Image 1 (spheres, helix red, strand yellow):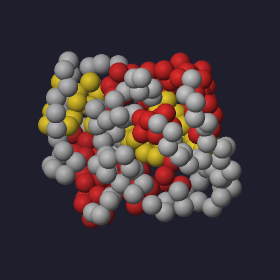
Image 2 (cartoon, helix red, strand yellow):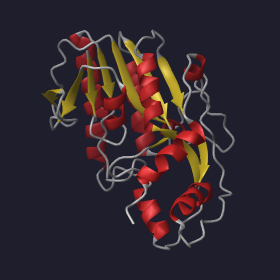
Image 3 (cartoon, one colour):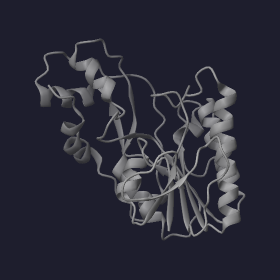
Image 4 (tube, one colour):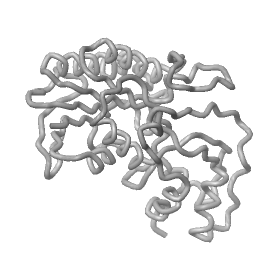
Length: 273
C-alpha cells in the first residue's frame, strides 16, 4: 500500500492521479475516494502501519515560493520541513516501510558555479535554505535501512488550480512587463510516471527529473498564438542555466512528454477570457 503526503499540492495532485491505488492520504484534510490518516509536518509522525511505500511530497512554504519560502520565519521553516521530514522518515523505517520516495529538488545544486554539469553522481551544493533542507533530508533518508529514492525535480508545470504560470499568464495578457527568464521544466504527469516506474525498482539514491529548457519568450509566444493577444512576448533571456542532467530514469525507460505535452495542456492553463 502507498501512503502519500502533500496530495493536494502542486505536485501531489499529479502523483495522486498517476500512481496505482489504493493510496492512503496523509495530511490535514481527507480527499474523496481515498483512505485518510491525519498528519501535519509540525506534529508527531502518522500511523504508517500496513504501508509498503511512502511518497513524501508535502512542503511548508510561503505561497508561491520555494527558494525564499521561509519568508521571515527561517526557524519555523526548518522545524516543519526538516525536523518534520526526519520524524516522518524515522517513523516509516520503524513501521517496516520498505521504500520511501522523497520529492527533492534541483535546488540542492543552487550554489553550484555556472557551467557545472548537474549529474546524479556529484554531491549537493545548496545555497538557499530551501536547497539546504532538501539536501539534508536526502542525507537522512540515505542512512535508513530501506530503499530511499530521491526525486530531484526541476520546475514542475501542468494544469490545475493555482498552477505555476497562473500569475505569469495573467500579467502577460494584461500587458504588464515580463522579465526575461528561462529555466528547466518537467510536467507533473511525467514526474508521476517516474515515481510509478520506480515503485518496482530496487535502485536507490538520486534520480533527476527534467525535460524542457524553456524560455519565457517561447512560452508566451505559444500563449500569444492561442489567445491572439496583441502584446509582444518578452525578449529571449540571455541568463545562464545549468541544465539538470538526467541519466538514471531514461535508462530505465522513462520518456517525458517534451514540447508536445506542453502544447497539449497549455490551453487548459490559460485564464478564461
